[in-house]
Length: 227
Ligand code: SAM
Image 1 (cartoon, rainbow, N blue to C red):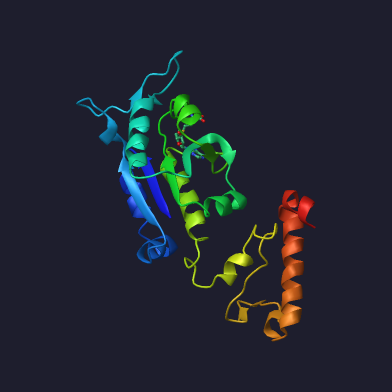
Image 2 (tube, rainbow, N blue to C red):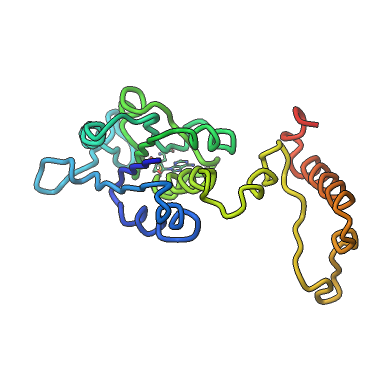
């Protein structure tokens, strides 16, 4: 998969691509992450990417031209499956969306700052607007990397044990069961006995029950359709 991220802070993208599974997936050639500096697509001395909002109001709005030029440049290298604007007003990103994006060959992410990006970028350049949650970040870089991380770990070969993906939270419409490791007793707190029993069927039943109870209690919205 090829991923391009257009940003005024490409270093954030490069830095966050240097760790853990994303880094390993890059090293294995499963994903190529390219950070592009939006300011390279400006034509004035100050490399201006923002301007005052039409209609007045606080803050600055990111101009459309640099984004259109940056995407024109990227599309010269080949087509993209999705061109994604990160925005709190976008569709909520979730595991199902991550699974769909993980089937793509190429994704382009456009990161906003200030009061956001001129709406014409979302309306006439991007193929989707994504939000990573109901809160406002300073810029789109962290949001882009949240999406990139969750998509990258779904690429075949990215995670050491593929089976661990199948049981993760949200994969079967449930939160994951509680996990424990050694020691069996820590400060008086014991690991549930069933996990030490060696009985695989009982452990599987317990885990399923825990996942269902936990999901019902913490995220009833998830279980409505699934249980
Ligand atoms: N004025 C905008 C609003 O009220 O919706 C917020 C702009 S925010 C300060 C600047 C940029 O951060 C956005 O253009 C977007 O790229 C990114 N951003 C902030 N929160 C986000 C979220 N929850 N999901 C995705 N991107 C977000």
